[in-house]
Length: 217
Image (cartoon, rainbow, N blue to C red; front, top):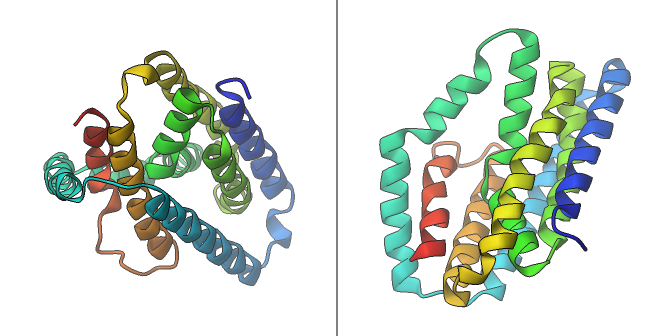
């Protein structure tokens, strides 16, 4: 598949899902929303476990990457700042910002784009696309039109990362990729528990710098 194909599908599924969510907003029961989110959480957990098991990291280096990456993210207050950004403004901006952050800020986005751009492997970003399609349906049913326009942000943001990985991926070392994928898998496991409402005190976004540091360590 050409680089960016997975991101294009991701953007289209967010667009279609959010439009359906707007159309059927009054007909979506709370029980269905909970069931879909539980399924998304399980799928995220399984994908994270797969990434952890498939890669052979340098464990000591991974430990220090997590410590320093987490300290750096905490210093920048990434989770706190992004949470404030998603909760402010008009109803339209709240829907747009909340959806954009949900769909593009996380280990799955970064690793999916890097894998597609550097290795031509679209499986992770396409798996994310399916989850985002369902999530956009649920978000649009409660947050409105702003979610629809987040599909453009997904296309631009993820497309940029994929193109960077495509042109500069040859400079990434295999072991660095393995370390980063291992960390990304662990963060996806944490994300799954947070989707289920567990481990909310763990600030996953503050750990994201460790994933980026791993690519260059």
